[in-house]
Amino acid sequence: MEWGMKNRLSRLIQADGKALFLPIDHGYFQGPTHKLEKPGETIKPIVQYADAIMLTRGVLRNCVNPAIPKPVILRVSGGTSVVGEDLANEAITTSIQEIIRLNASAVSMSVFIGSKYEHQSLTNLANLVDVCEDYGIPVMAVTAVGRELEKRTARYLALCCRIAAELGARVVKTYYCEENFEKVVEGCPVPVVIAGGPKTETQREVFDFVYDGMQKGAIGVNLGRNIWQTEHPVAAIRAIRAIIHDNYTPEEAQSLFEQVKAGKA
Ligand code: 5RP
Image 1: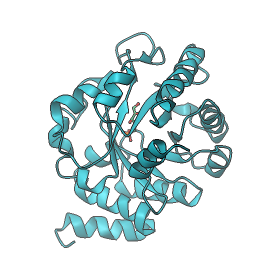
Image 2: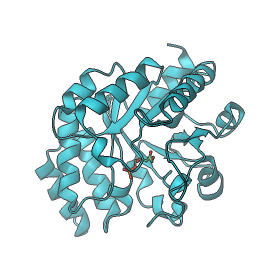
Image 3: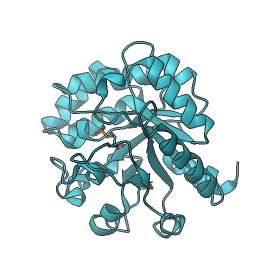
Image 4: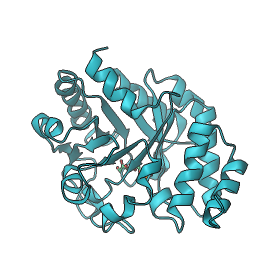
């Protein structure tokens, strides 16, 4: 692996082999998502606990201080919306010149396997990998399901992760599933990070799935709404960080969450 690629990956995946990515890219198809109306304000108290932020060029340029000491994963696919015909009909929306100009440590894009636009999103991935590899920029593939959340079974996710890795993704972001998640990770020759999904009823559910996913081989998370849409985002991200980097159990994470919430940690 080239020095530049290694250097960028080492900024994202920490020395312990683990990673906590904080995505705030939701507006690229959802508009002003709840609690992300002002993304720059949303991340202020929590970004210090993340290993990287994931966002589009528009939010990066307009809402984030260029002196931010965190690496950037630039979301470079889009072109659809929640009120449009099909979320899977994405294109690559950002040029390699812009990716370099914005000093991205990685780029991310979605693939929609099993959808009408499967071929388009997979060839988008392969082409993006070709362009980015020339400059030592890692591509993180996002295995997206659009509105079909019920698709998130181990069999389907394993298929998606493997295909994304085969086409050259350096990291794959996928959903967690309760059954056989280890098969998803085992079948994927590149590191897997877990997406959060819609906000859960309780914070403990998040600690449980992050912990279980890590036990089953994920290297970390790319988790947004279950941090910044919660009542206590600092407590949430600190507890999740403790699971990822300090091997906390869900019980220990819950206890840290309560302490931070109460201003005792
Ligand atoms: C949207 C994304 C998001 O980054 C991803 O879904 C993670 O965020 P959340 O934890 O809120 O689901 O890629 O397509």
